[in-house]
Length: 385
Image 1 (spheres, rainbow, N blue to C red):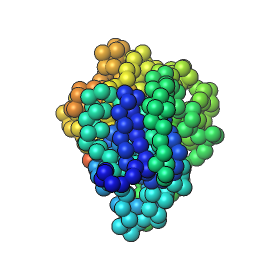
Image 2: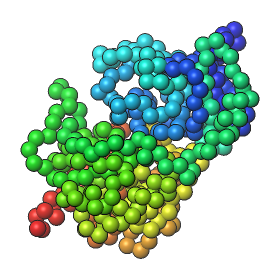
Image 3: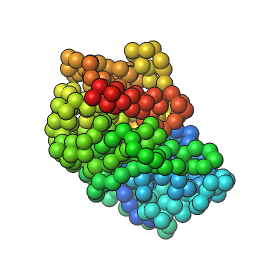
Image 4: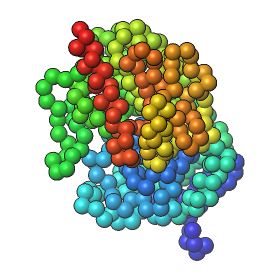
């Protein structure tokens, strides 16, 4: 930032590095893990994606805020990411869909932003050192206790061992019938009876539920802590495991026993993101923390069974260790960036999952077939009686 401009926000990394910039949105302090996202669009969806709980997002694309904010693009009711870091201060929105601007929205939602940051330098640091714990502060008067902020960043426990699904899941069950957005009518409702699906909410994005509804599913959403008995009480024709934040091993303490019992019922099962990791753990595999994770909308993933390459959206800091997959569980997709696991299936059963987000449309429709595959498995089971 220019030397003659007094900073109103600062970002303190746990290694003692400090970045100064311009604050926007809410004032105060927040402590979280710092990640970078390479997507060129979707900043509102990213901020409201429950998978970003416990994280501050550095946007590598400089034009953040230029299309404003609209409630139609929220993935959940309020922002979940703790804050945002951008190169250029958000501009006035220039888009016919904008209801308000990003700065006002961030302030109203209690989220801190910092602009004027060298995001390329910051991103290189994250890539080289791994995702650091940081403290982000915004004070219009520019008064910062740097030593205290660095100490808070160092004292934060981090995401390893942290179960955040309980913090972002729904409080009680509900039905979902809204379908994907389409021009010119926008969102429409699914009508009539459909394929009965129970979606376990570890931090579900709304667009995933919309894709299920568009595929013909009659969706009932249950909290992350739902038991197998509660899931099966709805007589589901399929069970869906949603995305979510935190350490999968921590969430697995209660999710894995449920999934194992549901698998015994022999119903089709489909998982995305954290749901993918939960299924892998239930099948006997292990998960590990990644250095800086995968966060962006340009990630090439190869379907190793068909040879097809999909351009995908990803948001995860943990990964399934493919070397620990047990017999009878096949790796179906791999990242072409680093070879990490991006999909599995159980041989001979309609049970599968992917690490990436097929609902996010970066391809734009490369991965929608997964929702159809899930629906077809349920129809086949129904036809078989």
